[in-house]
Length: 256
Length: 342
Ligand SMILES: Nc1ncnc2c1ncn2[C@@H]1O[C@H](COP(=O)(O)OP(=O)(O)OP(=O)(O)O)[C@@H](O)[C@H]1O
Ligand SMILES: [Mg+2]
Image (cartoon, rainbow over all chains, first blue to last red):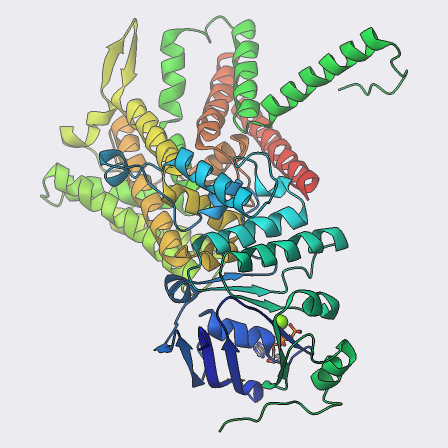
């Protein structure tokens, strides 16, 4: 199977800190790929490069085998890559439907929409409702302000937004970091639900048990490079952590 | 509201009654949570108070006068509201308006520019000031408070330099047309009041029913989320400040219509008055929350209090005192509501 999203030799430097030091990356169609690594290993930087939030100094990114150059999150989004950010992703005072369609509002047809720019609020509400139900997120009313939701439900809104609009890839940077046990479980179910719909998911997480539970493959990042790709059935958690911290060798060689 | 913790209700009938009163309380709470209810209640209360205190308050002529007196500040508040919704603030609006009026009137009177063109130039100059505000806030990432404090002083100085400290008189008719009145029932209403109300209506529509309006709220609520979801926040902010500037130009035209002169001393406290109207209207100074309809009520509250106290013969410093207290109360309520949400 050829990868849907891949990167080769990504380098990103901040002054004399090298956040990415020739990192490779490969996401296969329909899989949940977890990215784990110690603090500062370059996970977020890698994901930012893939989602257009930053431009790498060196290296190539290919989507469906074709080279792509993202200069902003909007570029990546147009290419069908949606990202769920840890806690910055929603406008709390706006309602659920408004958040789901933020930046992609649907206008009424005809003169009302074209000339008077009138929003089709009802359509957005019903579509939002359909998306949320699709992902089995139980929230009563789409006209409820997001700030009235629990942390898990808010993350659900962010996930639903990505899943609704992503055509190729959904990226999630520590989606459960701020959540309690029960709410994390809810988000993990959501991640599986997204995969069921055929969308591959990149999941960055420090929660090793969850990673071993949901991931199809695990990308281990260390010192700005990918040092290993393992299957959750091939190694145990202790071994993965050992590779993460450098106590054990990885299994990928660096391509120069 | 009194706490109902004294006795536990017992028996189905009592429980039912308690349930019903809880429903009623919830309905009242929901009603009170609508952002325009507070300002409207305050406005009605003020009107009630003054109509009981003086029989000269509740007449068509006087109410029309109140609307006329809040015309410029109300119009300035339209621009101010949009800026504050994006979590900014505009201290320059009164000074920019004053500069606009001097540009319009001097061009039309001494500059041999046809009056309609002079008006357009005046409005464009005000919009340009807004664009500078917006540009500095977004590109240079300076706080709007500081930027607009700077442009306040620049506009103030330019006003005095360009006018040579002279009031411009003998204006052509086109410049004062909005000060003319038309009969409505048994009172006379100025066209300027209608312009202000139309601006409120347009702003209400845009803020409530268009994507641009939603983005204004989103940027004020969580700018990072807005940016990451694809809202072009810089372009939005520059547009907001520029449009606000153009609205200040229109406020200047209303001012000229009412006073029939170009006065370099005009508008010096209007920035604070417009902020007062916005705050009394229930718009959060932290951005992202509130309704422009509330701001119309807020502007009218200021007007009604000034007018009513004047009719009662209360010295004007007390009017200032009372509005000051009201502003602090309104900001306090906003703060409390915010804390409760978190
Ligand atoms: N904007 C920045 N400016 C300077 N240095 C940065 C910046 N962003 C990241 N870095 C540095 O790059 C390195 C990798 O950071 P990154 O955020 O990618 O790590 P991470 O694997 O996501 O870590 P964590 O698990 O803590 O989120 C770190 O040393 C970090 O200090
Ligand atoms: Mg990180």
